[in-house]
Image: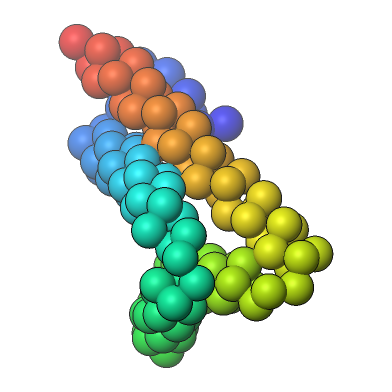
Length: 126
């Protein structure tokens, strides 16, 4: 059950901002992952990008906030998948490429879903 379904008559400003921020985050993550996959088709760029994404994710894992730790684990996993997609071992390349495509599409779908939920909740306020 989403946040606005719990509040039947008038969703609060906090729940609206949570839904909106989630929509923006998921949609931006999907677009960034799709762009990253496009540029990472070359082996060297893919290895460098995967290393940078892993380092970024590890930095987020070191944070004190549990939400940041979850985000860091997700980013680290994406970096590892990027690195695995450039190993040269066919099974790893296919499996990690498929998982990256699924992740990008899932992020985009979640972003659109949360955006629709935001507009529905915004209309319930009036």
